[in-house]
Length: 550
Ligand SMILES: Cc1cc2nc3c(=O)[nH]c(=O)nc-3n(C[C@H](O)[C@H](O)[C@H](O)COP(=O)(O)OP(=O)(O)OC[C@H]3O[C@@H](n4cnc5c(N)ncnc54)[C@H](O)[C@@H]3O)c2cc1C
Image (cartoon, rainbow, N blue to C red; front, side, top):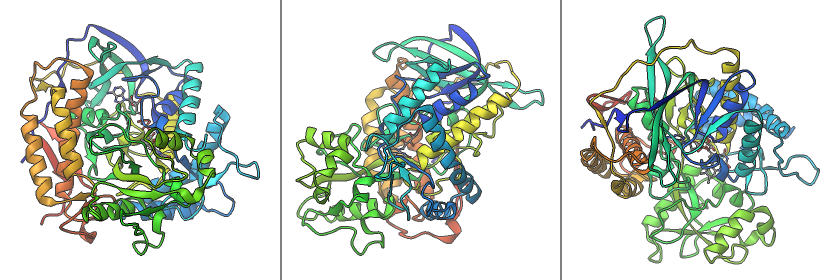
C-alpha cells in the first residue's frame, strides 16, 4: 500500500519576503558550524523553530570521537566505524571523516570549548561502546553537548550570523536554473508566537539552503531526544521530492532512565560512558545480561546491547518486562564528579546511583538514515545542502558508532560553510509550485502515532506488527486535512506522521536483520541485502526503491 501524504504544509499565505546569501535551517552543531564557516564572507541567516539550544546537540553527554592518542590510529577508528555500520558504510566517507576529526576538535578548542583534562593535563580520552580505543573527548564530565552548543552559539552571534528564533521551516521553494534544472530558491517559514501559534508566514530567498534540522527521535514515544527533534527536515525533503536513504536504521540507546510506564517525554540518557567507567547491566533476577552475548560484554555496540536488553525484557524476568538495571555502584563517589548531570537526573527520580542500581530501558536515540547527501553536504538538488543528523552521508551505515555524530556534524557543517564562503550557486527566482495537495494533521493524533512506533517499530520488529502499523498510519494519514489550524504542534504532528510512515515502510521492506534494524523473522543479515533502501514521496504516495524481491 502506498500511503498518500501532503506535498506541502497548509499555512496562511506568505505576507513578507527576505533575501540572504545562505539560509540555515536549525541551530545545532551542524547548522551553527555551517553558518559560522560561511559567515566571514556571506550574509547568513539561521532559522530555528525554538531557542538556539533546543536540538539534540545541547543534550549530548559522551563527547566527540577522534584519534588523539598517539598510540591510536586512523585505521582503527575507520575499522571500528565500518564494523558498527554492518556493511553499509561508505569507506571513503568514513576515512575522510576520521582524518578530519582531530582538526575539528582543535578548531572547537580554538573557538573556546573547554574539554576535560586528564591527569597529565592533556585532553582526557574515554572509551565508548564499539570503540577499540579511548578516543572520546568530553566536557563538563557528561555535559559535552552543552559546551559545544555554548561555544558555537557565542561564536556565531559574535561573527554576525543573524538568527530568527521561533521560526518554523515549512517547505522549500524552488526555481529553475540556467540549464533548466529545478534548483532551490529559498524556504517558506512560519514565525511562531509564544504558544506555537502562527504570527506570520514569509519566504526567505537564498542562493543556498542548508537543512540542519537534526533527527527524528520524537517520532517514537520513548526517546532520549528533546521535544524539537520531530523529523521536520526529513519530512520537508520528502515533500520536496528528494530521496531519503536507509530510514529503517534507528539506533536505540540501550540505557535511558526508566521512569515508569506513563513516561513519554524526553528521557534522560544514561551515557555509554557510565558503562565505559565500569557499570554493569543486570536483569530483575540479578543475572548479568551481556556476559556471553558479545566479547566486549557491557561495552558491545549499541544495537547488540539494546537487543539483549529487549530480549531479556520480553522474557519478563521476575515479572519485570519494561526495564532492567544498570549497576554503577562500583564507580563509587567518583560517579558524581564524572557524571554530574546524570547524578542530578537520577536523584530527581529518587535514585542514588552511587548506592542503588539504576532502572534503564532502550529508547530511540539516533537516526542513521536521512537526506541522501555527500560528505561536503551537497544533495541531488542544486543549492540544497544537508548536514548533521538529518543527512545520510554514508558514514554511519546500518548503525552509528558512538560519538561519531557530533564529529560528523562539525566536520561536514564546517565543510559546507567553507565551500559556500568560497562559491555560491547562482540566484534563481521562486516559481510558484503550490498544489492542491496541501494539508496538516491535528496534533491530537501525535500520541497515537508515537505509541504505535515505540511498540511496533522499536528494537525488535515483527513483520506482522510492521504491516499492521503501516495500515494504522495509513488510516491516520486519511485524517490529514487542508483546514487544520496552522500551529507548530500541528506542523510537527504532520511531519511525525510523514516520517513514521517512511520509517515503517522501510523497516517492512528490509527483510533481514542488520545493524540497528532487528527483525524477529530473519534474525541475521542476508548478503543480498548489503544495499541501501531509498524512500521518496510523489503524488501517488510513499515509494520504496532498492529492496531485494522476496
Ligand atoms: C541525549 C543525547 C545524547 C547524545 N550524546 C552524543 C554524544 O555523546 N556524542 C555524539 O556524537 N552524539 C551524541 N548524540 C547525538 C548528537 O547530539 C546529534 O546527532 C547531533 O547533536 C545532531 O546535531 P544537529 O545539528 O544535526 O541537530 P540538532 O542538534 O538536533 O539541531 C537541530 C536543530 O534544528 C531545529 N529545527 C528542527 N526542525 C526545525 C524546523 N522545522 N524549522 C526550524 N528549525 C528546526 C531544532 O530546533 C534545532 O535547533 C546525543 C543525542 C542525544 C539526544
